[in-house]
Every structure is written in C-alpha cells, then in structure tokens.
Length: 402
Image (tube, rainbow, N blue to C red; front, top):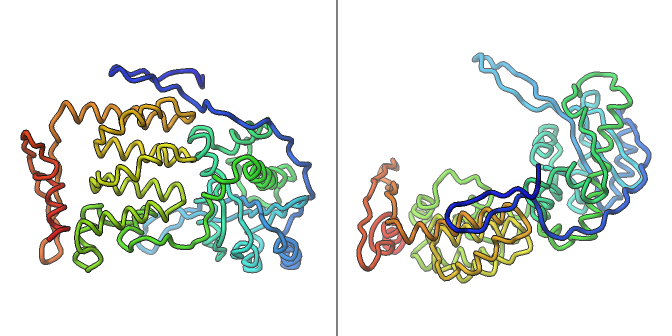
C-alpha cells in the first residue's frame, strides 16, 4: 500500500494520510540464533522447565489447529487444539510437542509464575489455547498491542515490526501448515521456533526504545481499583448497556446519585493505566454523556499511546465539546493513521451537531418484573437546547438523581 495515499473529504477538513508518519529508532541487529531443542518426552520437559524458570522474560508462541467436534445433539463446533508450544530465552528455544506430551503441568512453574514475564504477539488466541491445557498465564506483555499503541493498527503485525526494528523479512509460508502431522519436518520445527525467538528479540527492542509504553501494556491479572459497576466495561464483558448498567447499579445500591457516577468515572480515569482499558472507559463516559468530564479528558489528547489519543478525541466529539475543537484539530497531524481518522470523524461530528437536531434514541426502561422495554422519544428543539431537559439523557439523569 502506498503510504502517501490520502482519504479525501468534502467538508473542509484536512486529508487523512495513510500509514505511520512519526520517528522510528535506527534499525538494530537481530541477536544470533540460539540452540533449539525438540521436547517430546517428560524428562526433557522437566529439564527445559529447570532452565526456563530462572529467566526474567520468556518469548512464547503457540501453533494450534481447529478441531471439529460433534455433540450428542448433532451440533458441530470447532475448538482449538494445541499442537506445539515454543518457549524462547536467551541462546535457547524449546519446541514442546503438545500432542505427544499429555501432561504439560510442569510448565506452570514458568507460564503461571508472576515473577516471569511471558511475551506474546497477539496474546488472545495463544492464551486461550494454553488455558485449555491448564496453563494459565499470570504475567504477560502483548507486543502486538504495544506496537499498535506506538505505530497504529496497520503496522503492528509481527512481520511489520521485524521489518521496522531489524530490517528482517519474516517468512510466513508455513503459517497454515498442518501442525498435527508427525513427524514434523526439520524446516517446520525451525519455523515454529523462530517466531518465539523473534518475539523475544522484539521485546528487547521495544524495551530499549519504548520502555514507558511497554510498561503500560503489562498484564498481571490484578483488577483495576475502580467502582464495581465500571469493571465489566473495562474488559468488554458487560451484558448491559451503559444506561442500563447505571440503572442496575442504582437498584443494587452501588450508585446513589449523578454526582457519584461522575466521581466514579473521574477516579477511574486516574487509576486505570492500561491503554485499552482506559479507551473503554472513555467510551463509557461518552455513552453516559458525562460532558462534565471533558476537562479530565482533554490532557489525554496528548497521551503517549495512540489508543488513548484516538479514544479521547472520539469521546470529546461524541460529547460535543466545541471548546476542545482546536486541540482536537491538532490530531489531524498525529503520526498514527487511526488517530488522524478519529480526529477527522470527531470534528465532523461536532459540525453536524451544530447543524442538525439530535436524532431519536431508544430509551431502555426496566419493569418491576425485570423485563425491559424501549420508548423512542422525539427530542424537541428549543432555544435552551434539549440535552439537559428531554430525551434519553434527562431520563437517565432523573433515574440517577431519584
């Protein structure tokens, strides 16, 4: 893709240039390849664990396949099946045959040790498939998320980052191979080991040049010190909308009035440090139309991570904070493409809010028996404006303040 292409607009805003256009540290040299060990017997695994458990960081990658299962009710589903687990430390990489070794529990001393940082690139899938085998990661860094925070979503893949950091071309030709075949060809074992090794190398490069951002991405399983009703939104596992969550929290006595909603969200902005969780918090604030928190959000337009800059400019745009327009406009020249696009969309939203009345919105209401219904309210446009006095915002505020 040509990084100098533009996404043109017709509303007078600056064009959005594609790609990352910020500074990058000089290219480094990949460390020499260490010794590789094929592990398919219990005694070999124990020996590997004795070496791995003394490491401070361990690069990890997993190879797995999707297995089709048919239940007694003839329902077909696919589940991931761990085939290989690769663990790299300085000068050594261990490729564990997870098909032949039915008991991987010795690796808990490494994977589940909170004093050892597990390094993953795109952690979600690998963490889930390891958990299926009883290996629960206690402390990890997702290098894909870290890279995305610095360079943007389109330049955060392992291949893109290795090209940027080491001018190294990552061969992915065996990515879709059948990892359940045995015996594995030496080229396949080497391919599997290499991903764990370069993940370790990339961690050291990021730690050298972007230590502060890397530390923000640390995951230790410790819950954020926030109000209980906010916690589900930080992990995107709330079954309720923002409005319904506030109503439910009031019913349970967790929220007493609007001032407490504001105070809870303001405190969370201070205590939540992980970029993705803070981005979700900003979305919650915008969903609840807490425009009083605009002054707390404004500094995040200059946050170190692209996640937070994008989320903060989107929140300010949705809240309709016209006074922040100049600061939001400066992000049209941000180094990261996603931030520039978010700024463009938010500024357009500000303009549209000035020209058009608010649209209809379905307002959820909980009945005494717990059932929910929605009433679509037409919001009336008056000289005073309607945000505070009619529509779903005022209904929500009346629920909180009741």
